[in-house]
Image 1 (cartoon, rainbow, N blue to C red):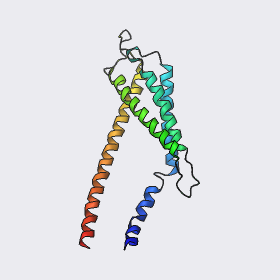
Image 2 (tube, helix red, strand yellow):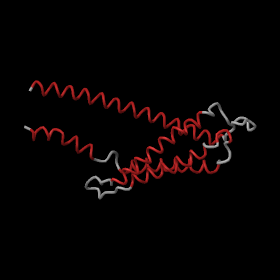
Image 3 (cartoon, rainbow, N blue to C red):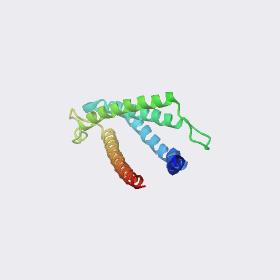
Image 4 (cartoon, helix red, strand yellow):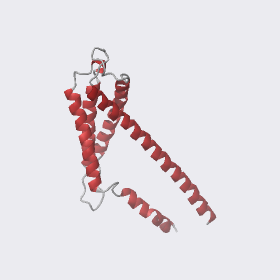
Amino acid sequence: MAESDDNIYTPLLQKIQGPFMPKPVSIAVKSLFVGIYITGIVLGALYINDCPGQRLIPFYLIIWGGGSLLLLSLTCLPCGDGREPPRVGLVNLCAQGVLLLLLFAFFIAGNVWIYSLYPEPWDDPSNPNHCNRILYLYAFWITTICHMFLMLLVLVFFCIFICLCVLKVSLGLRWATN
């Protein structure tokens, strides 16, 4: 009986352990993110002195882009031969975790820096809160898109949680009647 119960879950476990997305899609998505991160680094470096209203916004883009590139490269390290999932080392996982925490803390600080200048700080160059239009809009929209993505992620996790609760209740009722 116990052996047949284990076999019920085997296909699900194999699906979970398999690759999240096809390799070409993964390469395309990672390439897109590399472009976004490099753009942040370049814009931050080009306009490093062009945001006196909040002088930390260019540094935010540079550090965010560099840290995110490093994190992305750490996710590419465990390469397998394609026959079984690659193993991720403990040092790699710890480095990813620490980097994620630092990027999250820096993301919160960047929110304060960016949104404190919100009502169009580029119109009047004599304004002490002036910031370069390209630099500010890039930082603003990247941060806003990150917020949208995080909200979508929370919504998806909530829906998965609800589905798992319903599944648990329905399976529990089915097993209780057998």
